[in-house]
Amino acid sequence: MKHLVGALLLGVLGSHGAQASQALAVSKNCMACHAVEKKIVGPAFSAVAAKYAGDKAAQVMLVQKIQKGGGGVWGDMPMPANSQLSTADAKKLTAWILALPPKAP
Ligand code: HEC
Image (cartoon, rainbow, N blue to C red; front, side, top):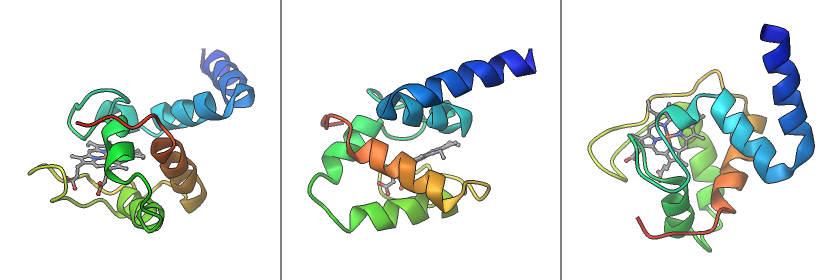
């Protein structure tokens, strides 16, 4: 079963950039608290894209925030640290989130 899941995941990762990043977000557990289109525990990723549209400095800030966690931007609930996440993966996820079609929260 584990092999099957791995093979499926590899298939997804190998296909298309945006889909690969979404699969990465699923595998890193981001989608336990986030969805693309709606708020769950954390903000919708499309709302994050809207908030930082055209903000070049946001990319660097978000990579760090995803790894270290933090709060105070979207509400009372802070994001816990994702310290096992590599910087390369955090950059991939940030680039994917910021490239989503922006949508006001
Ligand atoms: C336990 C729930 C939880 C998990 C797991 C989680 N997040 Fe979050 N995330 C949050 C919350 C809550 C916030 C809002 C924090 C705030 O208000 O500053 C947030 C905020 C964010 C933001 C916006 C930060 C800002 O300052 O605007 C991004 C981007 C983000 N998360 C990406 C991710 C990614 C990528 C992952 C997976 C590696 C992830 N999150 C995993 C709960 C979570």
